[in-house]
Amino acid sequence: MSEPTIDIVAIGNAIVDVLASADDAFLSQNGMTKGAMQLLDADQAKTLYDAMGAAREISGGSAANTLAGAASLGAKCAFIGQVATDQLGEVFTHDIRAQGVDFVTPAKPLDAPTARCLILVSDDGQRTMNTYLGAAQFLPQDAIVEAEIASAKVLLLEGYLWDPAEPREAMKRAIRMAKSAGRKVALGVSAVFCILNHRADFLAMLDAGDIDILFANDEELLALAGTEDFEEAVAFTAAKVELLVTTRGPDGAIAVSGGERASVPAEPIAKIVDTTGAGDLFSAGFLVGYVRGKGLAESLRMGAIAAAEVISHWGARPEVALDKLIAEKMG
Image (tube, rainbow, N blue to C red; front, side, top):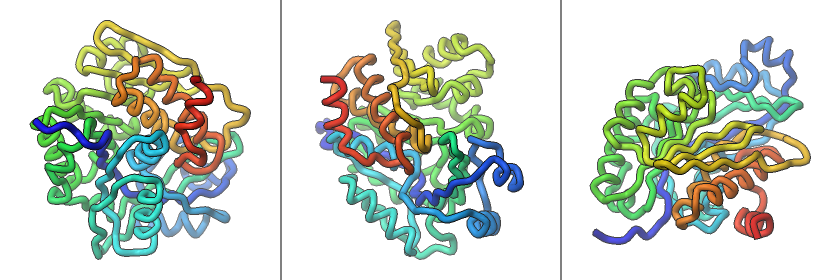
């Protein structure tokens, strides 16, 4: 079996984030739950975009954000996701390649445009996300190339992309390829609604041994385990997976692997500006630690530092070189 040549290959939504400030009244008037994420159809996306204030466009997508962070830490990464042949597709492609991530999935002339996430950022930094998946939900199975999957130490799957049927089948194909090559498979469950929609699928994959590494925040973990008790949820899920990583917002994060458990507090930050991408960048720091053979505690700290950087500014991609930042903070 050949040795892997890259660190992480990820499959996810190829999305451009459109961010604007909004107060609680605007959220209420438009039927949004502050801090939550909802899916929109094309008409809803247009109506909301027209109602938003002045906005800025920054490439996003959960798995793509994680790779941008990992690349900033010096990891070799590749992304698989679908964009359309339009302006936002060009923006996404340029941005991810500029951050050092290999992205070769061809753009397609589709009826649906490139995906976008309309993000309303509150004064306290909370982000309320409204996602139109567009072209992202048409990622075909033939975009999954065995040589690319086998070349990576870790295959990362984005839970958001489990919703549409076509990319779900593409990810199942990638899991089979990764397992055949002896690689690790990581799943970020992404959001509580993903679990509510696909809990049976996710649990079946865990029970089958398809997933080696699971990323979830505390609310997602409770939903997956079907309990309101955090420690019960940890015990339930950790028994099904080689490595469980759970973020807890201001309460830090934990990792459990076999009989070992480690925790880290949230990294101090002067001001939270925009929480978009916090979990994605935490995953980036942790995964880079993991593929480099770091222990649980050190990998968690790398994740916490990366997450703190991204919530200190607008957008879900790092604005400083994370490798230098982590070297400064961890010595």
